[in-house]
Length: 389
Ligand code: ADP
Ligand code: MG
Image 1: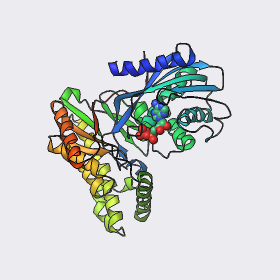
Image 2: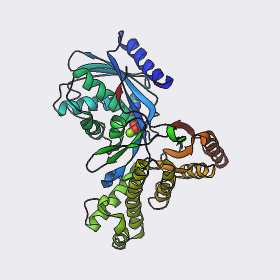
Image 3: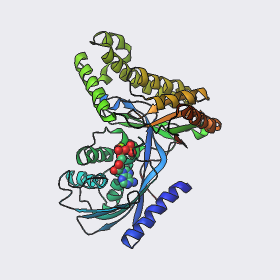
Image 4: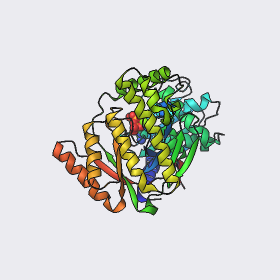
């Protein structure tokens, strides 16, 4: 366990002791994630390839009397308490406590006998940066409750339950990627997820062994109209699938893309479809290269993904384009925006020895354009949700 993990675990433990006057029964950690490649493919029934970050949310927890749940978070300094009435239906706990109440609600709805529990949450996953602090919170709480209650809920069924909590209790319409990543990722691997079948495969992505690193740069761009634009892209994709007579754009083979485009009514729709179909193909090509151990070769696919998001899907903003251009000019092997767009993070594949220089180049480019200075960190593929020793 690195010092950083010990730190956040330690903060959850001392938070528990301060809030409840006793030691927790255990601690459960769940990571944030980035998506290596595969953007806006999830709701088109396609492919994504996330990996877990070394940043985690930790829940220190112990059982208490039935049908009573109390949760403290270091982040807000607040304690939220709720009982059986509040988890009988969505909407009764709001704010950040809804992510916790939603997990209890979803477990009970699936027929599990959820133990009452006290929880204390600490995290070093930044909130709202697109690194999925929400799924990390859900997964830390879920795995704690599953273990404390001895519930029969295998890991492969946990992502869908956490997704139900977020979709129906919190009311955020997310796909299955974030919860799958935080629960199922493995150290040194990326998670190849088929969003239609929800099948996963662990793909070797051992950066450290090859002298490479992934630099994650928080663009700090204000999210501009992200929700409305997301809904618009989604609607366009669904309409296009209907026009093409397929259940989802995933069903348009890359080899038949030109024919499909010729059947669409306007240039904007054609560009949106081209992004989704070529992006699925880039995920498959990335997986093939990683299976062969040719990690350096994926750089070009990452950069092509960015160009497709910028030119065809129109979801980038000047900050992320600047970060990608500066990273490439400073020697990155590939770089792209990661996440839904209109801000969020950029990732760059770099020789580990170049990481500082690439980060510095991005900071300089930002300063020249008068943007808020970006944050960055170097990451390696880490473990999914786990009980800490
Ligand atoms: P992202 O998942 O990209 O970080 P979201 O908007 O999906 O962004 O989720 C962020 C929300 O999750 C926060 O506003 C907060 O309500 C909740 N959350 C995440 N982590 C914590 C935490 N450690 N303590 C309290 N609330 C948290
Ligand atoms: Mg989220």
